[in-house]
Amino acid sequence: MRAEIVTLALIVGAFTWAFRFLPTRADLSAMPRGGALARFLAATGPAAIATLFTASALPYLQAGVPLPLICGTAAVLASYALSRSVVGATMAGSAAYGFGVWMT
Image 1 (cartoon, rainbow, N blue to C red):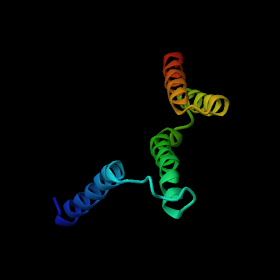
Image 2 (cartoon, rainbow, N blue to C red; image 1 turned 120 degrees about the horizontal axis):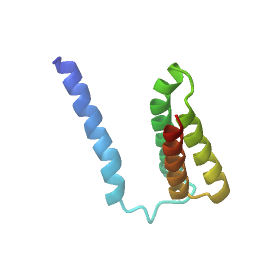
Image 3 (tube, one colour; image 1 turned 60 degrees about the vertical axis):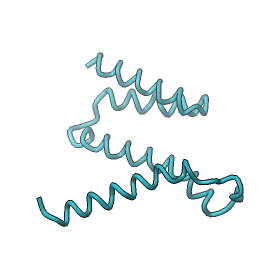
């Protein structure tokens, strides 16, 4: 294995760990609500979800849009729009995706 790849993997791994671990240890009580750091931290969750969705959906889209992807995505969007619950939307999307797999 090339040293550049190992070095890159270690750097990315270290920053991923720091990005996940350090906010749990930081005292954010004194942080202003409308500040730049607060907006950054609030935006990372949706950005991560969008990135993971795109990375998982692209292989499906190359072969055509399958029924499970349509069912799961529609269920997540509809459930979240109605309830504003991330947990409910996740559960509805999982159930709908499973139903779509069962139907095909």
